[in-house]
Amino acid sequence: MQHRIPTPFGRDLLIVSNGSAIVASDFVAPERARSRPGDALLVEASAQVRAYLRRRLRHFDLPLALDGTPFRMAVWRAVAALAFGEFVSYADVARAVGSPLAHRGVATAMGLTPLDLLIPAHRVIGADGKIKGARPRSLRARLAAFERAKV
Image (tube, rainbow, N blue to C red):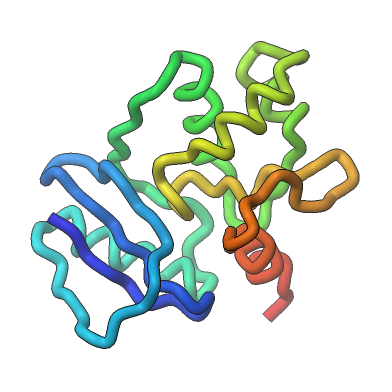
């Protein structure tokens, strides 16, 4: 099952569920046709994303199906635990997962994040406070600016 949620970032957030966990989320080109959530998990995910967009949600609380190396899974879990507006460096995440010299591995894991927004890669920044390594069409800078705004 899948559901599209419109966002103010110029793209919809497509969330995919297997009924018991979110298996994918990705920012995609917007569509005029709107979908309805196909299962209870997608209804809850949609409600949480909308609360996030209203700045009323500090942390997503959804079951996530992650598949990766033990290191990447630890990184994704650590980053998923970050609250709205909480920014950390790649080195901070590396230390948090018990691999203090693995900041490059953290960067790789962030580049491979399977769940856009739900694993908030935009909250992991360079030591200089800037977004690093984002793909050209990435929304990371816009998401970070959204969370940093004092609206």
